[in-house]
Image 1 (cartoon, rainbow over the protein chains, first blue to last red):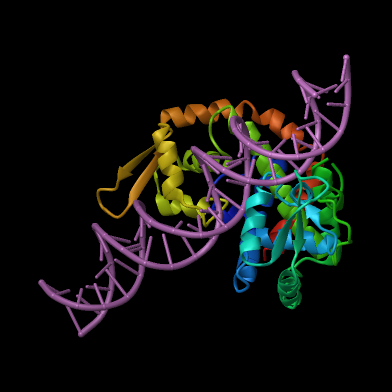
Image 2 (image 1 turned 90 degrees about the vertical axis):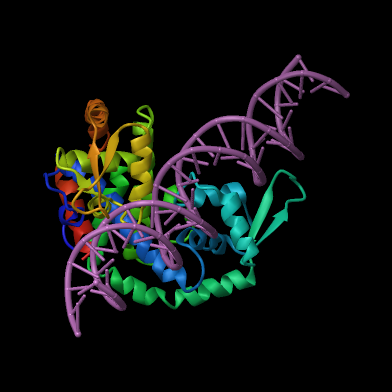
Length: 151
Length: 151
DNA sequence: CCTTAATTGTTGTATATACAAATATTGTCT
DNA sequence: AGACAATATTTGTATATACAACAATTAAGG
């Protein structure tokens, strides 16, 4: 582990701090995603499926329609229909056709889904500890700069 | 655009700045990736293919074997064999079996590949301008914190 | 030499992303 | 009511990721 230049064995200097920051965000995101995938593997779900479950727990017991799940997802272009279907096959969510609007499909997390999230919650402490290489102040600064970047 | 909470319509507060930072990195990375994809679309390549071309230009005219391409890629788990094959079909790279080691495949960027990168370089100014919502000092701070996070 | 281990790359399968087209339903306007 | 637009979701296709199994070649040790 080290600077981003070392990680990707870059010979030349980056042209600017801004370009370096872009590469650094993409690289760090991939690194985080891989760590998350390893974390969820024993529970037989992917980071993306975990994200959907978290969204549904956030609104539980109120159901969310597919479109509402989509716009809360980290990756907006992803396809909620197919992710939800995978979760449904595992019994972690329910799909219900909405009676007042038959275009709409309501999605609810099941008890089994809630129980799985509870189990995962127990591993969160260890996970958080692994992010403690940066201080709380640095995390705040990181959040401020990332929000500003997307402005 | 706004804070990460607004973006993903999160009702509850994050449990910690660290957890929020993790979500923020993943979300911002997806945002950047989408912007990049749009930028490269007119040139008919994906961000991942662009990354491989950049790596090969970095070592040009010296060829790189597949393993060297892989370890320089932003996403290490990706599959360089198939990415390189797509680029080869477009005539942007060449594959050559290495005579002294027949396990090894040398990859070189072609003149056509170099020409494409040159064309894309012309759009880089506009691209960099779009990242200027943060200052150079903020970009440096961002790089420092991300490097520290992965330590 | 011959066997075994290490290196390098390819292929198969499941998952997810990106985008566009298709389908069904509801709302609106005249 | 009928035409047309808007909404909500599904489906198809191409791309990329994740991981494991496989094959070919080279290196190493007895």
